[in-house]
Image 1 (cartoon, helix red, strand yellow):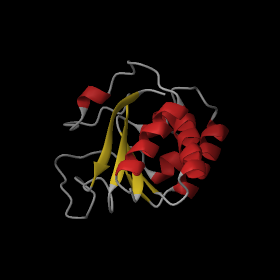
Image 2 (tube, one colour):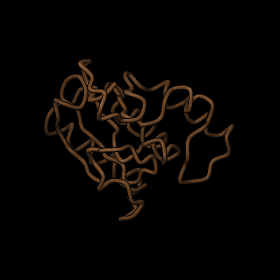
Image 3 (cartoon, one colour):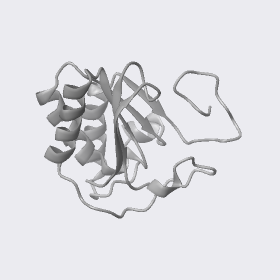
Length: 157
């Protein structure tokens, strides 16, 4: 999996103290995206075990309440995201999971999202069902700079 960055403790990326895993790569091209350096699918590949260990170490330093997946676009590496969630659930079952994605719920549930690993549409639908079953929150939909939001955890409508 390609990871842009990791924050071991944040209180602004979801409820409570959370680790944040920033995925590298996004093809959505939202105008005025606040994180354009995450768009290119390039960088060092990291194993599920390596990223899991980053979260486990952060949790040992400061008792985390959860993990947030952001990007880039986490769902463009959906199979790796699911494997990471399952690995974290095995090691730290008490953590909550949240995700920011530029895809809408209808796009995800129908399998209409691009995946780096070229999953078939039916596979994408199944992967999304499995991921969403683990999520405690998801902020979904394209970033729209001209439509600010007053809702918590959202920067645009």
